[in-house]
Image 1 (cartoon, rainbow, N blue to C red):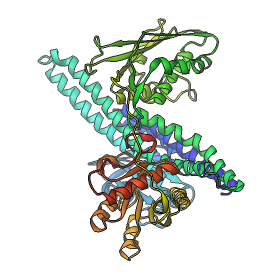
Image 2 (cartoon, one colour):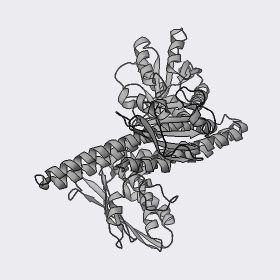
Image 3 (cartoon, rainbow, N blue to C red):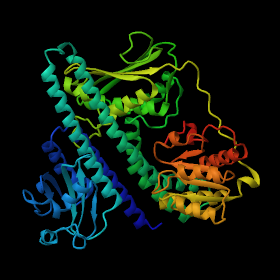
Image 4 (cartoon, one colour):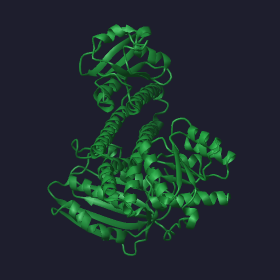
Length: 587
């Protein structure tokens, strides 16, 4: 691959990551908005940068007119003006409850051409706001003709959905407040409980919105990671030329930093990351981390570790637990700019457990610093995704959220004890593992001629993923036919060109990979099936089809093909195939 092309592609990937980060910040801001004015303020502040447009406008429906109430644009558009809804693109979008995608404003019957002729606008998007009965719309404008990209459409629609949710939440909370006013003298005893319920509802809504964003970002970014892992694996095979090694290494090293970190952080916060859970010995783990923690804290912060004798092992993912402890150490370091002390204390407990924690044995791991401490409002919001008190560019606001998400996924919890001037203690509760985890044994890999023979039909709508996977399959010795659509794969098979193995992506336009696999299971039960995916959800749809999560390596693909072929040879109940790295098969 040409170095210039690779550099341009990496730049595009970084720009896309930055736009989704801006969109996430906007969605977090809108989660707390309770009025159209507040929502408009957020859209005006974030939408243009998130979409990469030359201008945006927020339009309010006012009976039979469209009122352009706000804009952020390279040149003035129509802020403050009203137009008949019947002859306005925003009116069309609200009336039809769908996005208007217009590559050429001078060649679309929905556009009042004369209103646009004196502006810079040459192409545009208009998305309605309000699920059932749209009351507003947000438009994005570009100074050049051209079809808006799928990502630009997805970004603007995601912001519009967040605005719709905020509007509905505003109406819901307004109704609840009115009801409370009317019934306050009869339900005074229940006021505290109702406030707690409302707080829980807000938190669930925020996590749900973040979960949807996480799934989308994880799917796209794991598609980007696939050529990285495949390229590095081919380099390590020892069969590459120097030119090929340089090409794969440049792509991998430049792209990995801009994709994998954000994906893992978001998956941790949403509690969707795959975990290698086993019995973890905390003394061994902390002993191995002491040098790293000391260098992270610096010479002005004294580190002490105090572990209860004969501490039982905890049920955890050792790597993710190390990342969580490192996050806590970094937060403590930043809270002690003039130096101080950091202590790590661990003890086993089965009583005095936090509310909501299931009965059982736990290890309480407490990280305490002598820093500035937190005000009550900061402490209450500290574990919310994207919340940070650090200056812009010095923190993502995901550190404590990641720790909280990891603890919850492992069956534990996190507590914060802090006050201004008295430092901060973070208590991480982890369940005790009663016995060491048994190492999962992968199914035996195929050997001999069978492992190096057969025809594979490869289906993936992402060109880079399809290309890198095809190289891996060819390197294994398979004959490969590939296509970008499930419908095309069906036509290939029905024409008589039947493969031995189908390897298909899950999330694709039109027919999904699971739908294709289920159809082939009925019509062609002798074809081995393997689903690959970078998106959550395939496990719930098809738990008994062999599957593999992106990114994967050469040996993971080969092991899963062996499992898929074994499943055809022995069609009895299966556990879902060979997941990469020995983890539970989550996407």
